[in-house]
Image 1 (cartoon, rainbow, N blue to C red):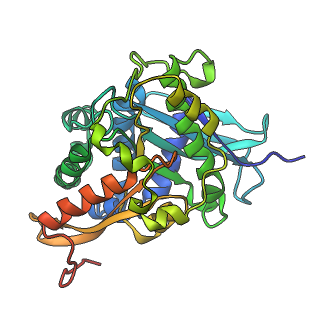
Image 2 (cartoon, rainbow, N blue to C red):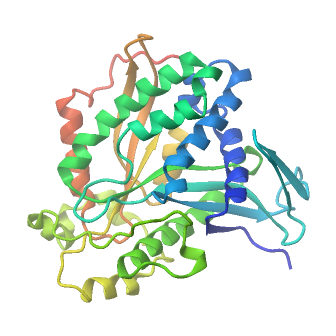
Length: 356
């Protein structure tokens, strides 16, 4: 019997090389990266280095988890039994006929911040900028790197105030994609619920004790989260006041794969005010935003990105959030985002000229 599609946690660098190539293919025509690197002949090389730099400062140092998405080798007529990935230092060949599954994509989640901190790990821009320099992005496209840094500075400023003001820990779903030949088959929608469940279980396992299972251990993790407690206790009522939750969130089905019993056991085993993290996603296309919304995310805000240097608004930015355990904190973040957007006069999109 042919194996089904699956998503699983991985700490294998060889897996990452395959996931990275899937990212390159998938994001090749993504609005954000098309604007950064207009020249197609340079875009793949730039993206490859860009994703590698992000891996180095997130998954590579235990600040994020990486999930691989796998499909049966016969799921697409274009499949081959061998896949060869080349890097500047080595070539990796993977024979997929042994287990009948092929890596076709992946998901990268930044871990929630430790203890009473807000947001996610690696909020600072400096580690990313240093990694971009180490991996030579400027050599490929100085203009592309300049645009990348301008956008990331803008995004950091956009997110910092609402995330900090609401004071909640968050996962950050920074990359999620599969190879283009597998799109429109419903694979991501079928597996994303499982990906969220794996992410949530990883947090629960880490909260209880450092994971000892090989399947839940990343090679470079040095510290584990000990507590998310005691964050602005005056917001406790959000957990039980259904009338203050987002109506669209109440209409979404509960993730059937979440281990709610495990979460309840963690809550009942401590006298601390445990705050389950939200999941943040930032999207730069309507299609990507629609995918997230169909998989449990709520749309917080739609904001135009204006590049002051190039004097153009190349795309809109969707801010989305998901609350896997439904503890009632999503309205808190929603209110913070909308307050920040209103203060920045971002709510009205009329009259904005978008480049094509």
